[in-house]
Length: 324
Image (cartoon, rainbow, N blue to C red; front, top):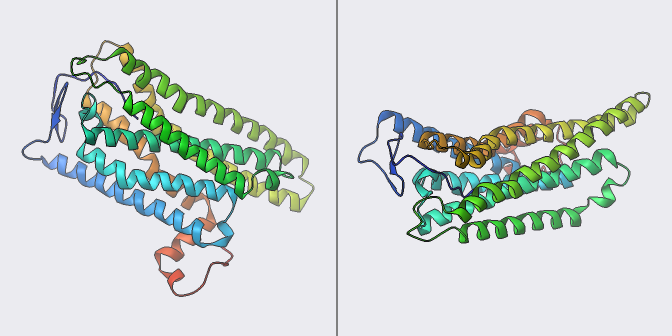
């Protein structure tokens, strides 16, 4: 996300040197810096590989061709791009080094950062809507959430994300005289942007999942005597529980960033660069954690991952395999 944050005029963080208007890589790197960069590079690799496994699994195995998994596929694509694009760009052009820098590379970094962050949030919103119909309206779920509806949801999510990313970045001030925090930059970057792209969607998702929880509890009590119904309901509740955990991890990773982004301009203290970088990388790590959640809670994803990693799918036709 594009941010407007006041930073210390002279700082010496781990791996680069920065002042209020620029940053530069040091002539030599400390051992701590090398370890940090190595860890972040490994994080990028894990993010790419994990989300690639999710994408291949959903595309290859017919059993995973469901509306929910199609939305998970779209989320995995956004997370994959975070690992392939945002991680490397953030290593070369840290967020704190682009605060007042309107160079082409910083604009590219900020554009992708904003696009993929908002897209992930919108995908989670779509998934919450899918879960709402699956649990609260199970008899009409397949007619209301079909392939066409899912494609429309995904298309709208990516289109809106692109429009917001372009508008936020292009409205960023290019005025060289604006060395302090420009009023419109602060309003758009620190208040309006987070409200529309984070706080409002999160409130909507929390309300939807609260409704789902209440309905699921009522269903569980009413079908205890019906074994088949209880089994089906149990599967839906398990899927919903897993996706609630995905939402919880998302909030854990991104809330510090958006809270910092919102409240930092209200204080008089300057923002240390290590704090800015920490909350930024915590948010980006969400793209690493999602595939691990699927692998841990979904037994069919675990089976699919094992078959892909072992190369078994290259030795035969397992498209119609019943994943266990």
